[in-house]
Structures are given as structure tokens and as C-alpha cells.
Image 1 (cartoon, rainbow, N blue to C red):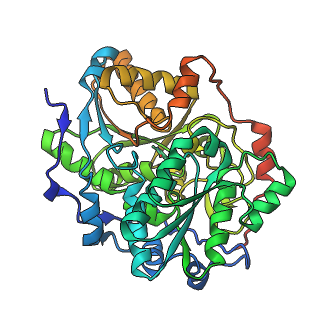
Image 2 (cartoon, helix red, strand yellow):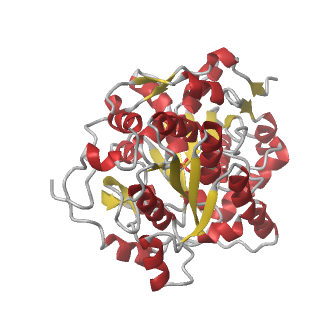
Image 3 (tube, protein in one colour):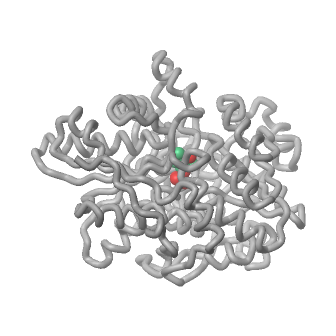
Length: 451
Ligand SMILES: *Cc1c(COP(=O)(O)O)cnc(C)c1O
């Protein structure tokens, strides 16, 4: 009974997989909010280093991982893949359940997979400081770690509701040397405007992005780093799926379905894109993205051009969106509260190449508890969406009396999210359906893009 599938260190991928040349059609252009025309490289170079910009638009299928980045990856990579024998038994399912565990990184999630190369390329370009936003604190802590390892300063705008709900995430960032502000803050125009309108604003990821982008755009030695959504972030995360493919080779198995939770789409992309590339070569695998019912971007949003941030400072992209001024309720899976979605994941979903499903948060916490009781690991509330969907697939297999091989991404551990579990255990968590009227209202404000 093999439970833990470990890849030797020399099997750590040497290249990332870039899905752009394998998309079902050309990428939609990214639009400048100032001109209404496709963004120019000059505009993006104000906030990103050249190497990242090149990756963002590259048509090259395989991109070398720099030696310095691989060196840091080996602190926790290759990450383990587990066969969830005990969970399978508890469910009485004929299905085989595997999970890839990204909680072994120092920050406790998949996010350092992109934070490390982003800090590396910025250091290489002579940048002194990175500014970013963080929702639940996972990205902020990952970038703080990466900046610390490459000798960069780091400023983090942390969504205010999380700043108070997750004080230990803030402490982690400070340990790694970052400066952390609750967003909306007094530090930027965007923050001051939001506070003037509503001094009690909980903040949102879109608003925190506005603050970080403004900070980067107004300081020459400072760049911006985004933890999800963008093409280069999705590409950096493909180390997850590439390793999983090797791990399946080791045990002579292959998944029928791969599952990941979906906020901006990066851990889903990281797990699923390498499998999709095999699908194009004749392998049969379903890819399922799971999102919260309170912020159901793929399942209830529209596929259209929208701003990436509330203050309309960042570029306009074609993606599934709930509207850039949609304020999701303060659910506990903070990392899944973004109004938009990776344009790459969006394009694949629109083309019918991947599936999506939305789940209520209490069902996810219930799944997380069953998982923890049998497999030991406390999942991040975000990851609990993938856990629940994997359980549901396994129960369906039981109902149908069919075998099925399931792989899901356990994108992080929940040790910093115990307040959420406390609330669940005390029976204080409510389910939120997405407020349809709020989304309708927000969708009225999409930018008019003429191409
Ligand atoms: C940030 C985060 C997510 C959601 O982000 P994606 O870009 O959609 O992957 C999921 N799980 C964990 C643990 C996270 O920290």
C-alpha cells in the first residue's frame, strides 16, 4: 500500500509549460484603461520587469526555469503526492483518490512557486522593492519570503477584513521583513478615495490591487507583483502538474479527473494545464475548477472585458467576471474572493475544454474535517473546495459502482486559518449564495471595449 509518492530531486522540472501556443484560439488583447487600445509594452514596463513581460506574451511552449529559482524550489520541491487510502475507505468508494500537497512550502501554499521567480526576475532587472496586495495573506507571505531570499524590500496591502481576521499571516510577512498596511490605506490615492466613500470599508482584493499598482507606478525603483490571474503566474505553477505526471508514471496510474479550487485560477492552471497538454495528445482527462457559491466567477459570471481592479488602474482583460466593483461577502476562503479569473482559464472554459462547479462553504468545511480525520492534514479553507469536490466525485463513483481515479490539488494547509475552523465548529458559519442583484448591478459597469 503505497501512500506517499516522492519524486527524487533530480526529477524537479527544468522547464515550465506555457499553454499559450496550445490554446484553442488566439489570446484576446489586454486593453489599457487610459487609451482603450491594446496596452503597449512601455505601459507594462512601468510595473513589471522585461523577463516577466516576455513570459506574459510568449508563444514558446517550454520555458527554462533559472538555476537560482530551481535551487530555491528544492527547499520543498518536488512536493509529495499522496494516495488517500484512509479517506477512500471512510467513503467506501471504489474510486482512487490522489492529492498533490503544496502546503509543504515555507509559506504553506503553492504561491511561492510564482513568488520566487517573480522576485528573481525583478532583482535581475535592478528593482529595489516590490509592492503587492494580499487577500487571505497567502500571497503576501509568499512574496515576503521570496523578497527576503533575494534581498528585496516588500510592501503588502492586505485586505482589511483579513488583516484583522488573520493577524498571524501579517506577523509572518513581518518576520520575512515586509511592511504591511491594511487596505484601504491612507498610503495611496485609491485607498484614500475608498476611505472617503466608506471609512468602514472591509476592503477587497480589487481595491488592494489598485493600491499596490499605484505604489509601483509612482515609484521608479518599485515594481508590482501579482499572485494569480496573469499568464506568467499560471505558467510558473505548472511545476505542480508536471511533477504529478511523473508521480503517476512512478505508480503506473493516470487520473480520470483532476480537480483544483479556483480563485484567480493559478493553482488550477498549475495542476491542470500539463494534463490538458496531454489531452491534446489523445489522453482522456476531465479538469474541474471549483469555486465558492458566494463568488462564482466561472459558473455565474460573464465572459467579457473587465478591469482587474476596483480603481480601474490596471489593464482590462477578457475573462470571466462578476464585475470589478463586485464586493463578495466576507467568507472564510479569502483567497477565492476575486471578481475575475485568469484569462487563460477563462478561454479554456468558454471553449468547453474544462469544467467548473460552485460549492457552499459549510459543505467544504465538512469535507475538510472528514479529510483531516482520515488523512491528518488540515486543509486551507480555499483547498477545502477541491477536497469537497473530490469527495463528491468519489461518492458519485460509489453510487455508479464505477472505478475512477481522482487527483486533486491540496493547495495549502490551514494552520493560519483556525479562526475559520473555530467558527465552523461553533456552528457560526453561514452559507451565502452569490447575491444575484449585486452582480447584475456590478455587471452594468463593465468597460466598453471596441476592437
Ligand atoms: C491563494 C490561494 C488559492 C487561490 O488562488 P488561485 O490563484 O486560484 O490558485 C487557493 N488555495 C490557497 C491555499 C491559496 O493560498
